[in-house]
Image 1: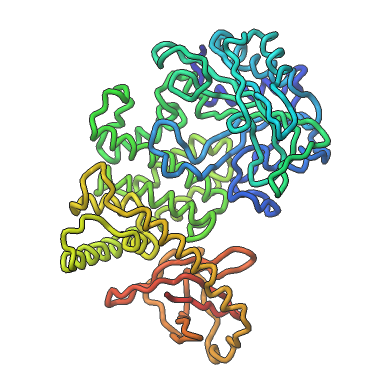
Image 2: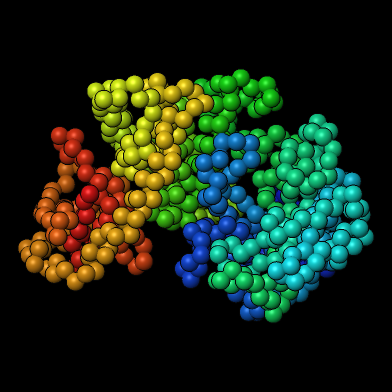
Length: 559
């Protein structure tokens, strides 16, 4: 097996598809933000998303054989990041046939790339085939099995898997999809037992998925046949680099190593996997390793998100960015609360630019904006943390003075207030509770069943929020006589001090405040408004849960 850098892999990928009988054309990567017509997902999660109309039959201007390296972002596993496997941002190697070649070429070329181009022995490659499904009216993929046998993969290294794990797409709720064949690589005896069951473990790693797109998933959940047969393949660069560089996890590859080295220098701690295997970690090393990985993943993702124009907010994509920044900052101060923040963010953003800026021009063009955006969000969060800790201490005091002073947990309502009003991450709320002596490590200091109920209650209230009130025909003009338009400063500042209250009034029992200027984005063009807190000099805090724009005047709805 060749030891190849990420740059080597990019070049080999390019040359492999552009030359000879493969004759693929390079398709420029898409932004992480999907096309405005795509309402099914917040982010581009795979390279196929920009190709949906062409998978359905529309001719592509570059032809019907394409390849690229696509920036991808998946948010479902944010809370899992910190272990050895999960990432939010990753780069996806992909190639496509739009009604041209199908299974034989796709499977043959995949094995050729893995074996001849990057040096993985054919004896180390296994594969899956689709086991069939009655609802689709198709049986086991005998054709794929035969092709794999012909190119050197025996039945002992082929496993038939059904709909749940071997059928891919669509990227959102509906769209092109189909059964697939996945390729696995055996990393050798040092990584575990020899069993070709194609289950995810340290030894047998899935690297490449060949999706044979023959179906379209409809809104009602049924499937219909596409008018053309397509191939959509995807292989994660990070995972491939991990295998070829023989690293424990993706976080020790050259795609993350430079981040870890810089982080070590700034926090004054070692990243343990550089020195030993994870089985040998003590508890402190386990905790620190988790924080290292959260920081590395989340800051890299945040850089790419901001480079593509995402602004931190309390809704949609902006909320994902805010959550990532707050989560990695909490991990950062957990490693060293006295870190030189400005120096660290400047260093990391510039190092990520050195690594990726050649391939992604939006990073190199946006370095200064990326740095200021991350720092501004952290500064805002620092103030939020202080407010939240004060509120937490107030809750603890109330518990001690209550009829049940021995209660050793936070109720769901209490935890949700810290989360919703003060913006504290859930793991930070848990840690505060542990530090206070609520419960013991390993037990639950927060009633999360109640927390989820409080979350749903808030969602329901939001559905009946000021948007409905705003649209019920209230004559807002009579409340706004003499009020000047609000100055919006949210693109430059995420928090603001010294603002003037121009009017504070109630309409049908709903409190509304108007300021001379505001950092809160008002609902517009289909994008929902920001939400946040308003803190007075006496430390009284109000929750702003909706902002509407009436003739240039921003109405801040208070609860």
